Image 1 (tube, rainbow, N blue to C red):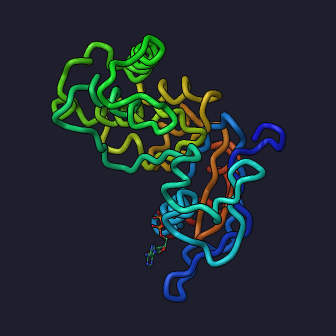
Image 2: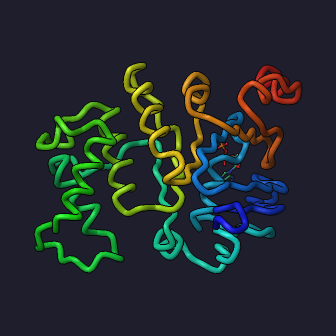
Amino acid sequence: DVAHGRILYLEDVHVSFDGFKAINGLSLDIAPGELRCIIGPNGAGKTTMMDIITGKTRPNTGKVFFGSTIDLLRHNEPQIAQLGIGRKFQKPTVFEKLSVFENLELALKMDKRVKSSMLHKLDSAQSDKLAEMLHTIHLTDSVSRMAGNLSHGQKQWLEIGMLLMQDPKLLLLDEPVAGMTDEETARTAELFLTLKGKHSLMVVEHDMSFIETISEIVTVLCDGSVLAQGTLDQVQADERVIEVYLGR
Ligand code: ADP
């Protein structure tokens, strides 16, 4: 929501599991086109936060808005996906027996806003979009390869490409570079920098050198709320952050 300068807005969110406060007064803002990194020790509440945004987990109290007008707490998981919030889990999920091209084609045809049948050929605008995506995700040379034969990093890019074919307004990614080679990690950073500005991205990641290459603002979660926020240098110099990472 450009007018109000935010695409996602959480205010004082609380979630308890059997009395345990997994999310404890979490407030957060994401601006349109922003590439936000989320870090934090294990158990900080990063996964639960993404579950709340995507409608998988209901908070006990708090506000969760998409733009300034859409109350996400009034929508269920499939509706939230329809609104344009995409999610990528840590493990790549692609159709292993289909080619790279077919995976992207399927993603395009599964977009419910597009009234094309599964059997129809892509029109020229769709073909262009697919070709551009192949380039963006560094898979132009692998277009006919079976997805199951791609490297781990290439599968991750393919899945990101499939999500992007549906033009998400906000994309949540869980540890996208985990298990990637250094070269794949560098190319993923490149990919994210191309996406910045066009898409709003929230990335949970542990790889600090990756974060250093891509990030503007880093949010540190701890014990279910925001412990610190700022540039990577700022949060790494924050004594509370140092204590959380070294003291546990
Ligand atoms: P992170 O992703 O930062 O590691 P999580 O969001 O997975 O953190 O978990 C936050 C806390 O909530 C952890 O202590 C975890 O054990 C607890 N938790 C998460 N999901 C559940 C659940 N369904 N039932 C009980 N406790 C949970």
